[in-house]
Image (cartoon, rainbow over all chains, first blue to last red; front, side, top):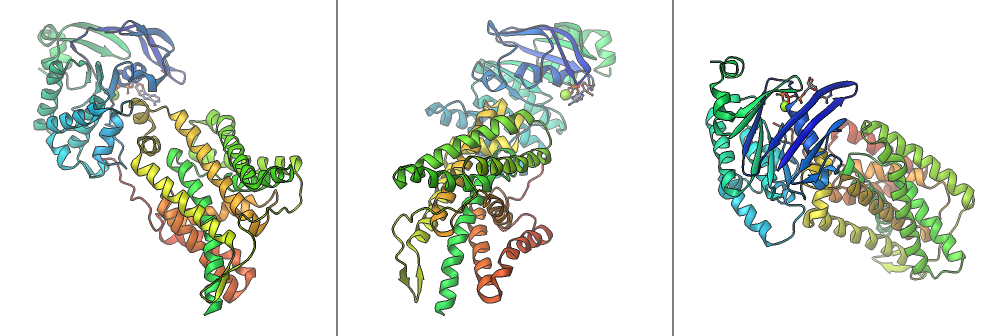
Length: 233
Length: 290
Ligand SMILES: Nc1ncnc2c1ncn2[C@@H]1O[C@H](COP(=O)(O)OP(=O)(O)OP(=O)(O)O)[C@@H](O)[C@H]1O
Ligand SMILES: [Mg+2]
């Protein structure tokens, strides 16, 4: 579904991605774990087209994707729930969801919104409230639900568990696992390596702008180096 | 009493013009957080282009439409040539660019047209209408109807249409707007063309009453800005109420104190708002991210 080859990106003069290779196959949950500042967010920003790529290529569903403008990528099936949630704080919960389906104007929008409310009932309760007033966990739910409103084939998730209480983290991970049943392929970026690897099929480990390891999630969880560096075991 | 009514009528008339200019501010501000100080020049262009279209032999309604469309295109040009290339610069820089653009438009108008005062025939004649012991020009009713019509249109646009909400979303979070598939360049083009067209409409409507020339834009921009600040930047309802209140303040100042102090009203309003209620009368409470 998604193939990244030799991807490089920089902020000003400082290169932060030094040639990333990665693939995501349809139906998988793939995770990229790595410490603070490894470049995980930058990678997802490149995939969504909001960060310039200096070298390498992105192929999505067989199409060259590297120079497709950001606003066209959702139409081609790639959505992102970005780091820091980035919801529309001045608009209501319902307006946020409606804008998630900005590209669509059919009766499915209504059904998708009901599905989102079933997935996160608290959002239904708060549907008319201003999104900026939601708690951190509710904002994260809204960010995921908004991304799903765009009917993605592949969803990029950037640290959905960040800053959430353990119970909420579990709920969010359960939802992500449930996306498989909805035919949504997932690329999940996390600092919470254990949680992410527990629900993923495959994983990559990223360190200072490079992929240093990759493989089936259960192998990574079992790997002593990973256990030491990322799982704190 | 008739005196008061007379001041009220003239206050509401100029207030409606300020409201129209303020509504123009609202759209661009909503799309980009930029206060476009070339907004007054759009009103000036609307009046001037209509004047010259009429003198070239066009019937008035056609001249008005031409003025609005041409000014809308100039708005798009301003965005494409001056704002879009500087995107990513701080909002303050963009605001300064709009001030530069205002000076440029004014200078270009002086060269292309002339330095004279011009008038446009009133839409429905010049016979004053008697009302509650005072008189009001038919053209004033056009101006007021124009402000109310544009207000209702914009209010529906922002609250009822998906594209209107996309404009709001773009100013609220440009990154997220792109991620949901909104073409933010297109939103900016839309905002500039719409707001230039509304400015031009204001110019066309008021020229039969106040006359126009190449240099009327700055005063209109400042008054419209004061009105938008008073109502709360970004809120169409605020722009309408702010415009009318400012117009009334000016008319009362001119009527009961001295017309010399009329223009001071706008500046006092700007200062008072900045000091005592920076959000304005209807300003959105800025909800911070958690
Ligand atoms: N806007 C920016 N300007 C300059 N440098 C940046 C910018 N954003 C990130 N960086 C740098 O790029 C590198 C990678 O950052 P990135 O945010 O992609 O890492 P990350 O893996 O997502 O980290 P975290 O887990 O903290 O979210 C870091 O060294 C960071 O300091
Ligand atoms: Mg990050």
